[in-house]
Image 1 (spheres, rainbow, N blue to C red):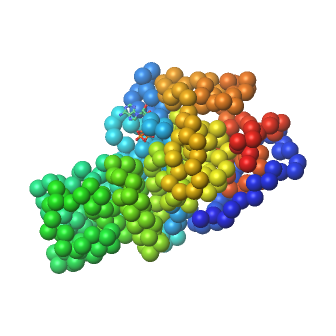
Image 2 (image 1 turned 135 degrees about the horizontal axis):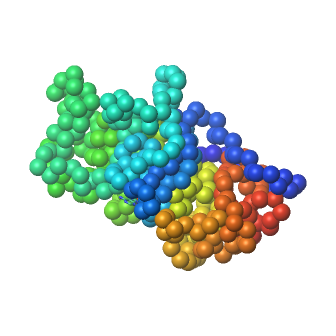
Image 3 (image 1 turned 180 degrees about the vertical axis):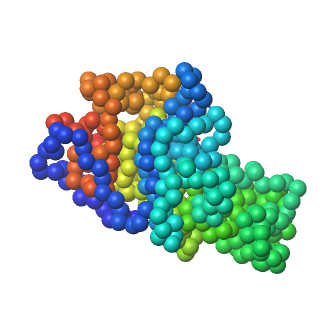
Length: 365
Ligand SMILES: Nc1ncnc2c1ncn2[C@@H]1O[C@H](COP(=O)(O)OP(=O)(O)OP(=O)(O)O)[C@@H](O)[C@H]1O
């Protein structure tokens, strides 16, 4: 976790110029998403699902992506890994992957298909939304794990693959004997663990998990998340973890990026987002879910629903739902930048943090 940040308001007001960007965490970047834009479809009917998103994942970090359904979380990670289903199309940006050997970063968006396929599982592995239902019902678990290993390590022997499959199952808390089970003989939580084991088979440096526990009960969700954290501590991979439940994210993530209408509107350490949200949308999102721990919060929800991406309002996309809306929010599109407080590692896209404005009390604790 990042150290707690001093949130004392800066004594001198910030200059009226554009806000500066937040400083990095100090760890080396492993994946840098730069100005990524994704459209679905062409021409007049195209949906601008992602509009110039910047996000950096650092080595060994758990980065959480949160936001309501349809805000672009999946589009961001599938765009960044070139796994977008049609009619998704990357219209701009670059995604720099920093290899383990320290050689020059590779732009995944411009890599050849063959190189991308080779690296995708080995360097960056993805556990898809609803993954646990994608196990083949007619094959034993062990066979499916072994097939996955064989696809990327064709020179490995059958014995090696079997041993690795057993080891992988134990790694995610399932008895090695389960290699002989069929998917229907496992609970939902166990099937999800198998998918995580499969993703970890080639020791990736980045693990992307899209709503990995949504279909599971709360106890099982917790167990799996603890397991992922434990594996991260032992194996050192970095994680991008997607969920619409920001309370859950606070439990597992080091940093959190909150998305709204295809953009990131706040990015900070998990504890800062949880204790001191600075964007009105982050505040609303946090107060829409019961916290897993700590004192109870009054659940307020957010009035209205996310905007139609084909017909975005002018200025700030959140303004029509924002209780702190100001006249200029209709004219100026807010960019991510430093807050009105002395917080070098937080970025917020909200005009309330520009010089000359009074930040509402609930966003300035
Ligand atoms: N196949 C598609 N065709 C057209 N538009 C799409 C398609 N898939 C996604 N979109 C658009 O992209 C937006 C972002 O979708 P995305 O699935 O990335 O959101 P999300 O935040 O991951 O949502 P969820 O939590 O429901 O998975 C949606 O609001 C939708 O308008």
